[in-house]
Length: 278
Image 1 (spheres, rainbow, N blue to C red):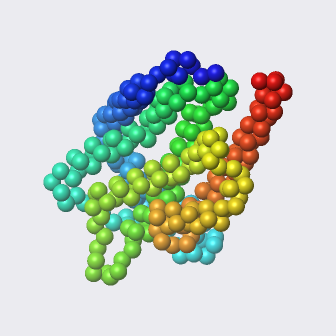
Image 2 (image 1 turned 60 degrees about the vertical axis):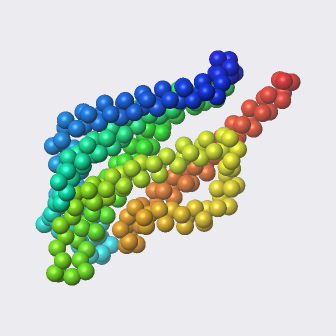
Image 3 (image 1 turned 90 degrees about the vertical axis):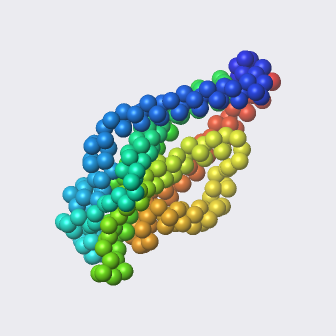
């Protein structure tokens, strides 16, 4: 059963507890962000600016794939696509601070999940807590898989296409620092959160808002939504959208399977409960 203490807590007590979970989460983000702030050269020169360099590992793979399928050799360029500039007095300092904070969020994501779990777990039954022990590990793995996918696939695709696109040879691509960082950050964070789809479906199924039948019924709608999301976080070419859409569709199929497993467990639990006569 759920903890008695948790049941006796008032609404204000719950808000107070939530406040402390949020405070600890914020402190963790700031602490990790401070470490990232001190590692400026590694964070910017190696991580952030990595996808703009021609020797970024993803471009070698994309180059080979484009040659195999007969596409253009846009990914085989050995010259820098563009320069990055800062046109605001506090632009570089502001970018340094906000990038450090976002790095704190990404690296500290497992701890954020832990704080969230500490808040909701007292309201669960013992069996529910037992079956959800791997929540933090699985959710963290999915998030970091999404982050890596966004960094090594989506970000290079976006940077290569948008950074080399020209309406005229009279216009040079000198990209603003904030715009470049926003492109990388959006790709990484968006993919990290999208890869949490199986976890979201798991909890929606647990509370009865989603069933495998519903997921199958609206599979075509989900496909359209996935393609729209792919168009938002990738450049507007078909190849890039397909590359992003495929893993998301695979995650959707996995979510259907997870929903089936959850319902089977719930049915089995209800059957055992009925046999016990309670």
